[in-house]
Image (cartoon, rainbow, N blue to C red; front, side):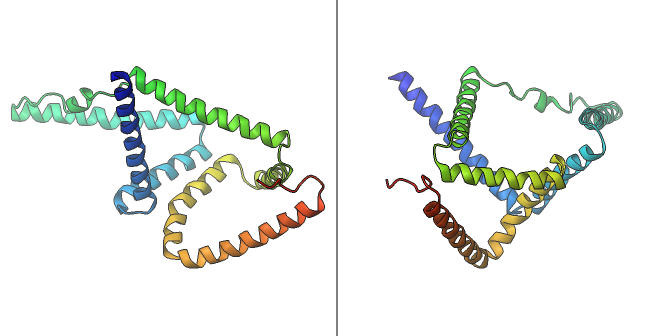
Length: 212
């Protein structure tokens, strides 16, 4: 009984954590706090542009040196200030040093189980597509891969990642402002795609889905 109650409490806590994380992510993507979103967006873009010019090892090393320079300088400054003012405030980063950042065994187990679930789902989906369990879905996947060959020929991975980041921080705001018009065009596109897929299903033997 106690184990069941503890498991339910852990599950509720985990759901609350993910719900809170999702809300914070939405706040960032919709630019509710301009300063916070701007700092995150600028930092991520700066990191990605740095990776286009330098190796990963160099970028990590430079970031570590910059962080160490800032913390060491601040530590020395606070030590000198305390010596001049003859105060005993202690280590300037004491609150952060005493903060608990380790993960418990239960937390690690939950994260491992979530990762296992996503990996298993992905493997099953790939098996379904590559072994043509549903011909239409496999054809769609093949068209997507064919389009990606052209995308890969035009852009490298980092360029695509930069485009994805820019889209993540711009598209939600654009969609929120022009939602009605975008939904209308997306509906037209969806209708055309469904029409084409329907015609393909009628002409290719075995492509028509079974009625559920």
